[in-house]
Image (tube, rainbow, N blue to C red; front, side, top):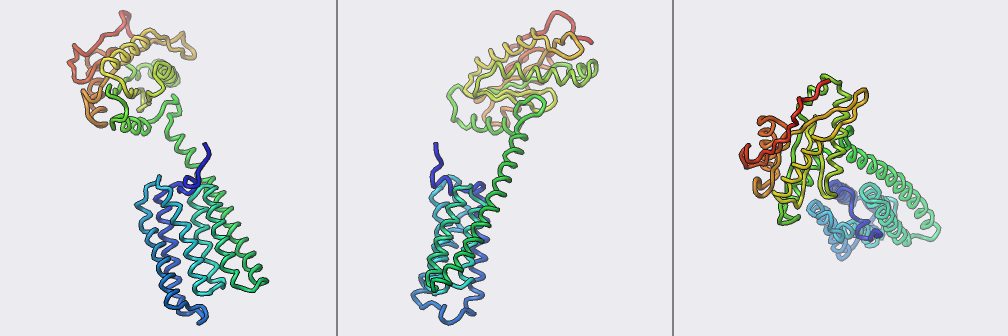
Length: 363
Protein backbone atom coordinates (compact mmCIF):
# COMPACT_ATOMS: atom_id res chain seq x y z
CA UNK A 1 0.00 0.00 0.00
CA UNK A 2 1.47 3.37 -1.05
CA UNK A 3 2.08 6.15 1.40
CA UNK A 4 -0.61 8.85 1.48
CA UNK A 5 -0.05 12.59 1.59
CA UNK A 6 -1.13 12.83 5.22
CA UNK A 7 1.14 9.93 6.14
CA UNK A 8 4.07 11.69 4.50
CA UNK A 9 3.49 14.75 6.70
CA UNK A 10 3.67 12.80 9.94
CA UNK A 11 7.01 13.46 11.68
CA UNK A 12 9.31 10.64 12.72
CA UNK A 13 9.08 11.84 16.32
CA UNK A 14 6.05 14.04 16.98
CA UNK A 15 7.40 15.42 20.26
CA UNK A 16 10.67 16.47 18.67
CA UNK A 17 8.72 17.95 15.75
CA UNK A 18 6.53 19.93 18.14
CA UNK A 19 9.62 21.38 19.79
CA UNK A 20 11.10 22.28 16.39
CA UNK A 21 7.92 24.05 15.32
CA UNK A 22 7.80 26.00 18.57
CA UNK A 23 11.44 27.08 18.27
CA UNK A 24 11.14 28.12 14.61
CA UNK A 25 7.95 30.09 15.26
CA UNK A 26 9.44 31.74 18.32
CA UNK A 27 12.57 32.79 16.43
CA UNK A 28 10.52 34.06 13.49
CA UNK A 29 8.16 36.06 15.70
CA UNK A 30 11.01 37.51 17.76
CA UNK A 31 13.03 38.62 14.73
CA UNK A 32 9.94 40.13 13.10
CA UNK A 33 8.98 42.12 16.19
CA UNK A 34 12.51 43.37 16.82
CA UNK A 35 13.30 44.48 13.28
CA UNK A 36 9.84 45.53 12.05
CA UNK A 37 10.26 49.13 13.25
CA UNK A 38 13.53 49.36 11.32
CA UNK A 39 11.95 48.38 8.00
CA UNK A 40 11.73 51.03 5.27
CA UNK A 41 8.47 52.97 5.22
CA UNK A 42 7.36 51.34 1.95
CA UNK A 43 7.38 47.95 3.69
CA UNK A 44 5.03 49.01 6.48
CA UNK A 45 1.60 47.46 6.06
CA UNK A 46 -1.60 49.39 6.66
CA UNK A 47 -4.05 48.67 9.45
CA UNK A 48 -5.85 45.98 7.45
CA UNK A 49 -2.58 44.40 6.46
CA UNK A 50 -1.36 44.35 10.04
CA UNK A 51 -4.57 42.74 11.22
CA UNK A 52 -4.51 40.05 8.53
CA UNK A 53 -0.79 39.41 8.86
CA UNK A 54 -0.98 39.37 12.65
CA UNK A 55 -3.92 36.95 12.52
CA UNK A 56 -2.05 34.54 10.26
CA UNK A 57 1.06 34.69 12.46
CA UNK A 58 -1.07 34.16 15.59
CA UNK A 59 -2.69 31.12 13.97
CA UNK A 60 0.69 29.57 13.17
CA UNK A 61 2.00 30.29 16.67
CA UNK A 62 -1.16 28.76 18.14
CA UNK A 63 -0.64 25.63 16.04
CA UNK A 64 2.96 25.48 17.24
CA UNK A 65 1.82 25.63 20.86
CA UNK A 66 -0.86 23.00 20.28
CA UNK A 67 1.49 20.77 18.31
CA UNK A 68 2.74 19.08 21.48
CA UNK A 69 -0.81 17.85 22.10
CA UNK A 70 -1.38 16.51 18.58
CA UNK A 71 -1.61 12.76 18.42
CA UNK A 72 0.95 11.19 16.12
CA UNK A 73 -1.84 9.81 13.93
CA UNK A 74 -3.48 13.24 13.43
CA UNK A 75 -2.20 13.64 9.91
CA UNK A 76 -4.42 16.61 9.09
CA UNK A 77 -3.06 18.72 11.95
CA UNK A 78 0.55 17.85 11.15
CA UNK A 79 0.01 18.63 7.46
CA UNK A 80 -1.90 21.87 8.02
CA UNK A 81 0.48 23.47 10.50
CA UNK A 82 3.70 23.58 8.42
CA UNK A 83 1.85 24.48 5.21
CA UNK A 84 0.05 27.30 7.01
CA UNK A 85 3.45 28.54 8.14
CA UNK A 86 4.54 28.86 4.50
CA UNK A 87 1.27 30.63 3.71
CA UNK A 88 1.80 33.00 6.65
CA UNK A 89 5.28 33.99 5.47
CA UNK A 90 3.96 34.59 1.95
CA UNK A 91 0.95 36.61 3.08
CA UNK A 92 2.96 38.83 5.42
CA UNK A 93 5.55 39.52 2.70
CA UNK A 94 2.81 40.41 0.21
CA UNK A 95 0.97 42.64 2.66
CA UNK A 96 4.14 44.50 3.54
CA UNK A 97 5.20 44.54 -0.12
CA UNK A 98 8.56 43.25 1.09
CA UNK A 99 10.60 41.14 -1.31
CA UNK A 100 13.96 41.82 0.26
CA UNK A 101 16.37 39.12 1.39
CA UNK A 102 15.24 39.71 4.98
CA UNK A 103 11.74 38.67 3.92
CA UNK A 104 12.76 35.78 1.68
CA UNK A 105 15.06 34.25 4.28
CA UNK A 106 12.12 33.06 6.37
CA UNK A 107 11.28 30.42 3.74
CA UNK A 108 14.26 28.49 5.07
CA UNK A 109 12.34 27.76 8.29
CA UNK A 110 9.64 25.44 6.88
CA UNK A 111 12.30 23.82 4.71
CA UNK A 112 14.42 23.12 7.79
CA UNK A 113 11.42 21.61 9.56
CA UNK A 114 10.49 19.35 6.65
CA UNK A 115 14.03 18.14 6.02
CA UNK A 116 14.84 17.45 9.68
CA UNK A 117 11.53 16.03 10.94
CA UNK A 118 9.72 14.44 7.98
CA UNK A 119 10.45 11.55 5.68
CA UNK A 120 11.57 12.12 2.10
CA UNK A 121 8.11 12.79 0.63
CA UNK A 122 7.23 15.23 3.40
CA UNK A 123 10.56 17.01 2.97
CA UNK A 124 9.88 17.38 -0.77
CA UNK A 125 6.41 18.78 -0.03
CA UNK A 126 7.72 21.40 2.39
CA UNK A 127 10.63 22.39 0.14
CA UNK A 128 8.28 22.72 -2.84
CA UNK A 129 5.82 24.81 -0.81
CA UNK A 130 8.66 27.10 0.29
CA UNK A 131 9.83 27.47 -3.32
CA UNK A 132 6.30 28.37 -4.45
CA UNK A 133 6.05 30.95 -1.68
CA UNK A 134 9.44 32.37 -2.68
CA UNK A 135 8.35 32.73 -6.31
CA UNK A 136 5.10 34.46 -5.29
CA UNK A 137 7.00 36.94 -3.09
CA UNK A 138 9.76 37.82 -5.59
CA UNK A 139 7.15 38.29 -8.31
CA UNK A 140 6.76 41.78 -6.83
CA UNK A 141 10.26 42.61 -8.09
CA UNK A 142 11.40 43.48 -11.60
CA UNK A 143 11.81 40.33 -13.69
CA UNK A 144 15.61 40.26 -13.79
CA UNK A 145 15.93 40.89 -10.05
CA UNK A 146 13.20 38.35 -9.30
CA UNK A 147 14.96 35.63 -11.30
CA UNK A 148 18.29 36.26 -9.59
CA UNK A 149 16.80 36.29 -6.07
CA UNK A 150 14.67 33.22 -6.73
CA UNK A 151 17.68 31.36 -8.12
CA UNK A 152 19.88 32.07 -5.10
CA UNK A 153 17.17 31.27 -2.56
CA UNK A 154 16.06 28.15 -4.43
CA UNK A 155 19.64 26.87 -4.46
CA UNK A 156 19.91 27.44 -0.70
CA UNK A 157 16.55 25.79 0.01
CA UNK A 158 17.16 22.72 -2.13
CA UNK A 159 20.73 22.21 -0.89
CA UNK A 160 19.62 22.53 2.75
CA UNK A 161 16.74 20.14 2.20
CA UNK A 162 18.85 17.51 0.46
CA UNK A 163 21.67 17.53 3.01
CA UNK A 164 19.34 17.46 6.02
CA UNK A 165 17.03 14.84 4.51
CA UNK A 166 19.94 12.51 3.74
CA UNK A 167 21.39 13.03 7.22
CA UNK A 168 18.05 12.54 8.97
CA UNK A 169 17.37 9.39 6.96
CA UNK A 170 20.77 7.97 7.86
CA UNK A 171 20.18 8.75 11.53
CA UNK A 172 16.70 7.19 11.42
CA UNK A 173 18.13 3.98 9.93
CA UNK A 174 20.82 3.91 12.60
CA UNK A 175 18.26 4.35 15.37
CA UNK A 176 16.10 1.62 13.88
CA UNK A 177 19.12 -0.67 13.71
CA UNK A 178 20.04 0.03 17.33
CA UNK A 179 16.44 -0.57 18.42
CA UNK A 180 16.41 -3.86 16.56
CA UNK A 181 19.65 -4.92 18.22
CA UNK A 182 18.31 -3.91 21.63
CA UNK A 183 15.20 -5.99 21.03
CA UNK A 184 17.03 -9.28 20.37
CA UNK A 185 19.27 -11.31 22.65
CA UNK A 186 22.54 -11.79 20.73
CA UNK A 187 23.16 -15.33 22.01
CA UNK A 188 19.80 -17.04 21.60
CA UNK A 189 18.05 -14.80 19.10
CA UNK A 190 15.10 -14.48 21.48
CA UNK A 191 13.52 -11.10 22.15
CA UNK A 192 14.51 -9.06 25.18
CA UNK A 193 12.50 -8.11 28.26
CA UNK A 194 11.44 -4.80 26.73
CA UNK A 195 9.68 -6.53 23.84
CA UNK A 196 8.04 -9.00 26.21
CA UNK A 197 6.78 -6.19 28.44
CA UNK A 198 5.24 -4.37 25.48
CA UNK A 199 3.57 -7.54 24.18
CA UNK A 200 2.30 -8.47 27.64
CA UNK A 201 0.88 -5.00 28.23
CA UNK A 202 -0.97 -5.21 24.91
CA UNK A 203 -2.28 -8.72 25.62
CA UNK A 204 -3.47 -7.74 29.09
CA UNK A 205 -5.28 -4.68 27.77
CA UNK A 206 -8.19 -6.95 26.89
CA UNK A 207 -7.66 -6.78 23.15
CA UNK A 208 -6.94 -10.50 22.74
CA UNK A 209 -9.70 -12.92 23.79
CA UNK A 210 -11.81 -14.17 26.67
CA UNK A 211 -9.38 -17.06 27.20
CA UNK A 212 -6.99 -14.73 28.97
CA UNK A 213 -3.22 -14.42 28.81
CA UNK A 214 -0.70 -16.89 30.19
CA UNK A 215 2.95 -16.58 31.12
CA UNK A 216 5.50 -19.39 31.44
CA UNK A 217 8.79 -18.82 33.23
CA UNK A 218 11.43 -21.53 33.14
CA UNK A 219 15.07 -21.94 33.88
CA UNK A 220 17.61 -24.74 33.53
CA UNK A 221 18.12 -26.81 36.67
CA UNK A 222 21.68 -26.73 38.01
CA UNK A 223 22.82 -24.52 35.16
CA UNK A 224 25.85 -23.36 37.13
CA UNK A 225 26.96 -26.99 37.39
CA UNK A 226 26.83 -27.31 33.59
CA UNK A 227 29.05 -24.25 33.24
CA UNK A 228 31.45 -25.44 35.93
CA UNK A 229 31.79 -29.00 34.59
CA UNK A 230 31.68 -28.41 30.86
CA UNK A 231 32.61 -24.77 30.46
CA UNK A 232 30.61 -21.70 29.55
CA UNK A 233 30.56 -22.53 25.80
CA UNK A 234 28.64 -25.70 26.72
CA UNK A 235 26.21 -23.68 28.81
CA UNK A 236 25.72 -21.27 25.92
CA UNK A 237 25.11 -24.17 23.55
CA UNK A 238 22.43 -25.52 25.89
CA UNK A 239 20.70 -22.14 26.00
CA UNK A 240 20.75 -21.78 22.21
CA UNK A 241 19.34 -25.28 21.71
CA UNK A 242 16.71 -24.72 24.40
CA UNK A 243 15.64 -21.46 22.75
CA UNK A 244 15.31 -23.23 19.40
CA UNK A 245 13.21 -25.98 20.97
CA UNK A 246 10.85 -23.54 22.67
CA UNK A 247 10.36 -21.38 19.58
CA UNK A 248 9.63 -24.46 17.45
CA UNK A 249 6.85 -25.43 19.88
CA UNK A 250 5.11 -22.06 20.09
CA UNK A 251 2.49 -20.31 18.00
CA UNK A 252 3.22 -17.31 15.81
CA UNK A 253 1.47 -15.00 18.27
CA UNK A 254 3.47 -16.26 21.27
CA UNK A 255 6.49 -14.27 22.48
CA UNK A 256 9.61 -16.09 23.67
CA UNK A 257 12.06 -14.00 25.66
CA UNK A 258 15.37 -14.52 27.38
CA UNK A 259 15.07 -12.68 30.67
CA UNK A 260 18.72 -13.14 31.53
CA UNK A 261 21.08 -15.96 32.44
CA UNK A 262 19.27 -19.25 31.92
CA UNK A 263 15.75 -17.91 32.53
CA UNK A 264 13.31 -17.88 29.63
CA UNK A 265 9.78 -16.49 29.49
CA UNK A 266 7.00 -17.46 27.11
CA UNK A 267 4.00 -15.14 26.77
CA UNK A 268 0.89 -16.86 25.41
CA UNK A 269 -1.94 -14.49 24.46
CA UNK A 270 -5.40 -16.02 24.12
CA UNK A 271 -4.37 -19.07 26.13
CA UNK A 272 -6.57 -20.50 28.86
CA UNK A 273 -5.37 -21.87 32.17
CA UNK A 274 -5.94 -25.48 31.09
CA UNK A 275 -4.23 -24.91 27.75
CA UNK A 276 -1.13 -23.36 29.27
CA UNK A 277 -0.91 -26.22 31.76
CA UNK A 278 -0.79 -28.69 28.87
CA UNK A 279 1.72 -26.58 26.98
CA UNK A 280 4.02 -26.31 29.99
CA UNK A 281 3.88 -30.04 30.72
CA UNK A 282 4.58 -30.90 27.08
CA UNK A 283 7.54 -28.52 27.06
CA UNK A 284 8.88 -30.04 30.26
CA UNK A 285 8.61 -33.54 28.82
CA UNK A 286 10.25 -32.50 25.53
CA UNK A 287 13.22 -30.98 27.30
CA UNK A 288 13.48 -34.01 29.56
CA UNK A 289 13.73 -36.35 26.56
CA UNK A 290 16.05 -34.17 24.49
CA UNK A 291 19.81 -34.60 24.14
CA UNK A 292 21.55 -31.25 23.83
CA UNK A 293 24.46 -31.35 21.38
CA UNK A 294 27.60 -29.78 22.80
CA UNK A 295 30.99 -29.65 21.06
CA UNK A 296 33.44 -32.11 22.58
CA UNK A 297 30.73 -34.13 24.32
CA UNK A 298 28.35 -36.91 23.37
CA UNK A 299 25.51 -34.60 24.37
CA UNK A 300 23.95 -33.41 27.59
CA UNK A 301 20.59 -34.11 29.15
CA UNK A 302 19.12 -31.33 31.23
CA UNK A 303 15.91 -30.56 33.05
CA UNK A 304 13.99 -27.34 33.58
CA UNK A 305 11.73 -26.00 36.28
CA UNK A 306 8.60 -24.20 35.12
CA UNK A 307 6.35 -21.64 36.74
CA UNK A 308 3.05 -20.75 35.12
CA UNK A 309 0.60 -17.90 35.74
CA UNK A 310 -2.65 -17.03 34.02
CA UNK A 311 -4.49 -13.73 33.83
CA UNK A 312 -7.09 -13.01 34.97
CA UNK A 313 -7.38 -16.10 37.17
CA UNK A 314 -4.06 -15.57 39.00
CA UNK A 315 -3.22 -11.96 38.12
CA UNK A 316 -4.89 -8.82 36.83
CA UNK A 317 -1.97 -6.75 35.56
CA UNK A 318 1.53 -7.11 34.17
CA UNK A 319 3.35 -6.81 37.48
CA UNK A 320 1.16 -9.36 39.26
CA UNK A 321 1.40 -11.76 36.31
CA UNK A 322 5.19 -11.72 36.51
CA UNK A 323 5.09 -12.04 40.29
CA UNK A 324 2.71 -15.00 40.17
CA UNK A 325 4.77 -16.85 37.54
CA UNK A 326 7.99 -16.11 39.40
CA UNK A 327 6.52 -17.41 42.68
CA UNK A 328 5.38 -20.56 40.90
CA UNK A 329 8.87 -21.04 39.44
CA UNK A 330 10.38 -20.65 42.89
CA UNK A 331 7.95 -23.24 44.21
CA UNK A 332 8.95 -25.63 41.43
CA UNK A 333 12.64 -25.21 42.28
CA UNK A 334 12.00 -25.61 45.99
CA UNK A 335 9.82 -28.66 45.40
CA UNK A 336 12.61 -30.65 43.77
CA UNK A 337 13.03 -29.09 40.30
CA UNK A 338 12.11 -30.67 36.94
CA UNK A 339 8.43 -29.91 37.43
CA UNK A 340 5.63 -27.49 36.55
CA UNK A 341 3.87 -25.39 39.17
CA UNK A 342 0.77 -23.41 38.33
CA UNK A 343 0.31 -20.15 40.21
CA UNK A 344 -2.43 -19.97 42.83
CA UNK A 345 -2.39 -23.76 43.32
CA UNK A 346 -0.60 -25.72 46.02
CA UNK A 347 2.76 -27.17 45.19
CA UNK A 348 1.29 -30.68 45.31
CA UNK A 349 -1.83 -30.06 43.23
CA UNK A 350 -0.08 -27.76 40.81
CA UNK A 351 3.12 -29.70 40.30
CA UNK A 352 3.72 -32.40 37.74
CA UNK A 353 6.86 -34.36 38.51
CA UNK A 354 8.97 -34.93 35.40
CA UNK A 355 12.22 -35.90 37.05
CA UNK A 356 14.07 -38.76 35.38
CA UNK A 357 14.84 -41.99 37.20
CA UNK A 358 18.55 -41.64 36.42
CA UNK A 359 20.86 -39.40 38.38
CA UNK A 360 21.56 -35.80 37.26
CA UNK A 361 24.00 -35.51 34.33
CA UNK A 362 27.65 -35.46 35.13
CA UNK A 363 30.67 -34.60 33.05
